[in-house]
Amino acid sequence: MIIDMPDTTANAVNKRLVRLRDEGGAVALGRVLTLVVLADERDVETAVEAANDASREHPCRVIVVAPASRGSEARLDAQIRVGGDAGASEVVVLRAFGPLLERGDTLVMPLLLPDAPIVVWWPREAPDEPSSDPVGAMAHRRITDTTVAKDPVGMLGTLATTYAPGDTDLAWARVTLWRGLIAAAVEQPPFEPVLSVRVEGQRDHTSLDLLAAWLGARLRCPAAVVRVKNAEAITKVILERKSGPIVLDRPDGRTVTISQPGKPDRRIALPIRALNEALIEELRRLDPDEIYEEVLTKGLPLVETGS
Image 1 (spheres, rainbow, N blue to C red):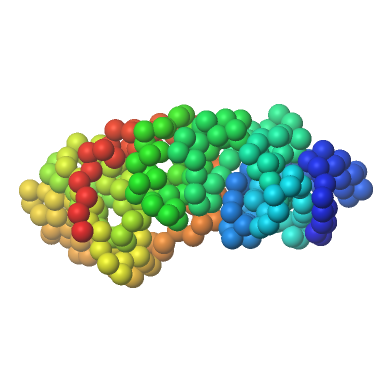
Image 2: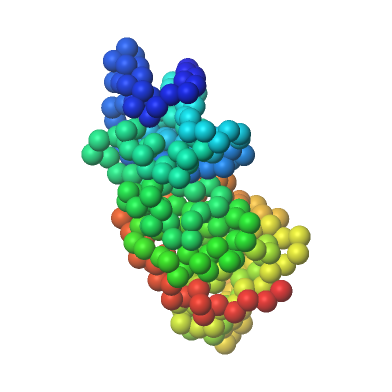
């Protein structure tokens, strides 16, 4: 069910949500968090679709705040989506006009679930310091996505200098399966130290930088990123050892081949993670990610980049 509320207020939207709950039963009960999405108009439907998928594992209230396409006078148009149009969540889309955009926190506050954690997600461009954003300052977790930013690598570098506990990035969630495969490969005989690491893949895809930074920090060796034309996400990881390299090669974005000296090649399904999968993973934890902090603030500056 979709309910349009043109020229309204956040308090009126909240009252309508309460009335819907009273009329339809415990609609809002069982919600484990409030997910606030600060999106451009072009990203609203994609973000709502991903949030709906995530809500099946993490039932939540989704509040999407987007700038209206036209108009300079203060005005708020709202849309409430419940039932089949909202997955396992309830979705409120707020399209703000004029000066209302300057203080998104005042729009969001009346709609927050009581005593529930707050997660803020910027689907594309994010402020230089998410924790100082009016809405970000209220959140337990702040999720960015540098992979789709206008300047992905530059944005990642900025976030490294302004990191605050609770910050994370979907580019980090996209390397989780890679991290597991690499750890399993390194822990096989002959148990030699890794001398250097090289991560290859899509130009400006920040998952390369974060994976290389993690490997360099954990293995205490030089780490480099090589950006390749016409590549998609991470395509190859090479770990140099004295007896020969460990190579994880994924040229097609679907299957990775693991090659090690003296062992037969292994092929494992490793499709590129979709947006909803990355979001689901990040919503699984609401405490600060200390490994991400170390990778972003200490490992990233040591990564060498090339093309």
